[in-house]
Image (cartoon, rainbow, N blue to C red; front, top):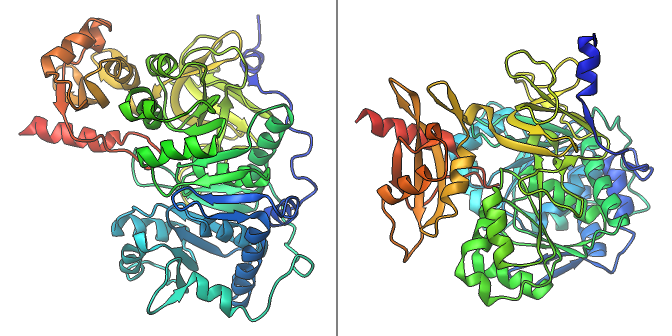
Amino acid sequence: MQHPAAADESFIVRGPPAPADLTLGAHSLGQLFLKVLQKTPHSVALVDGVTGREYSYHEVLQIALQLAAYLHDHNIQRGDVVAIVAENRYEYPVTVIALFLVGATVALFNPSYTTRELVHALNVARPKLVFVSSLARGSLLKASQTVKQPLLNVISYDALERGTSFAHCLQRSSKRFSVASIQPMSVEIAEEVAIIVMSSGTTGLPKGVLITHRNVMATMANVRDALDKGLSLHCSLDVLPWFHVAGGISMLSWLGANLTVVYLPRFEPRTYLRCIERYRPSFLNMVPPIVVFLAKHPAVLEYDLTSVQTIACGAAPLSREVEQLINERLSGIRIRQGYGMSETTQAITFYDRDTLKPGSIGTVRAGQMGKVVDVETGRALGPNQQGELCFKGSLIMKGYIGAERVIDADGWLHTGDIGYYDSDGDFFIVDRLKELIKYKAFQVPPAELEAVLLTNPGVKDCAVVGKADERAGELPLAFVVPTEGIPVTEEQLIQYVDERVSNEKRLRGGVRFVEEIPKTASGKILRRTLRELANQRAKL
């Protein structure tokens, strides 16, 4: 009889060996970026996708050095936290790199946060200094009046009549750092926190996620490794917000590989399509709502998207049905799903094989490990058995700021997501453990019902949540954004779903038509908000 521990060990799925050179000889991100920014000084590093303004790697390095000198003058040093509250703009990566050069930790906040949300984020991260855009300055100044730890200063990326601006900082440095004079310190990369990101807050108030220097270096090494193995990528089109781990760490990885980063401050359909046509990226990094847009929006057919070979999709499950829709519309494009969260720094699984399995989130990344455990007993499960996804490796965060542990004593991150892996080691995600709808004795995955609804031409977007019910526990309820010009009724959609799912998954909670589905900036559905709305209505 096999020993239980041996059985558990045999059910661990291991990725390929990690890239041989994780750090390029650097002992901190400051040292690493100082090295890579000098490699291709005349290459274009950043492009403003709205204005077309370009910034070379030499310019990025020089501005980062100027800002690092200002930060040094103002006693920003190792152990200090400095926050950025802004949309995607050229100053953003420059600020992050400057903070790495002086050894500080950077906290990334959503510029759309309300004053209440900013107060929470400031109290969690406790920054000494904040860089802010005009988009968030008003909320930040209100929030700063009630935080526990006073802010040393607020620096605006935009011009001001009063206060300190970014341009003013660059002019006020009492000395100039140069490549020869600056010496970024060495740190213990597995322990030193480089970045604080706020978790998405889909199940409660956001937590401060601690991302180490090693976490970021491991992601950068994966990108370099993919390029060395033939990934066709000369530029990226960044519309995912950089305050989110999926956008921000990707941006740093692109720059770390000396690629061109074309960025947009927000997703605007025609601007996005125009940038694809103009800059001709072969690889697009996006979230499911943008994939759905490409699959269903009529404007897509007006632009030349033939440069796109691969779409990498993460942040939330992408259904097989949507994959099929986009393949029918844009033939030849490969959809490669990845799976990750703030706590895994980047995608910890990714589909990088030529033979694709529809719906798969890929295999475990290089140097990482994955397993599926029984939700009740915690025992590791074999192939094709559904349970909670757990991961371990160099991409896993250090932990949360002052919050509960989700990394167990053996170093495994428990994700709260339900999924499985097949006999080839390919992983599949079913749904969030906390988002499963409990209908009688059944567990109903909302993502499955959403995938079915999105195949209906009359459905532009949708989300399914559980509505409280005294007898059944919860009833599946769909919130639907209808497609303009294609009339559809609640009864038609209920029947449409009934014909395609098993009995327990039917939309017994009904259908409600809405103007938009509330989502985080990274594209995750705010089900908590919808559940509150569903259950408020149920009590009326």
